[in-house]
Amino acid sequence: SFSTHRNHHNIERLYSKDIINNNLPGTGRKGQESLDKLTYLQGALYESMRLYPPVSFQRKSPIKPDLLPSGHKVDANSMIMIYLYALGRMRAVWGEDALEFKPER
Image (cartoon, rainbow, N blue to C red):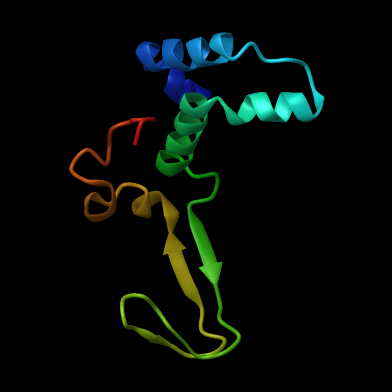
């Protein structure tokens, strides 16, 4: 994901500024509180995961009959495959700029 950031120097500058402005301490509870303030860095990491998920597919199988948000009925023990790589690029979900790396999303 950081290779994506290197290709977008303005984004790298923004999250570097985020780190510097929050003056991160070393470790411990204070460290976690400071990390929670790094909203731009967090957005950049989430955006990287959206465009380049660590796994391309995810498999789900309900233990009892279920109904998907789309209205499709799913029988118990059916296998549902989700193509995460494509889902992260769907214009219907992410908008016309779905292929663009935008941490502020």
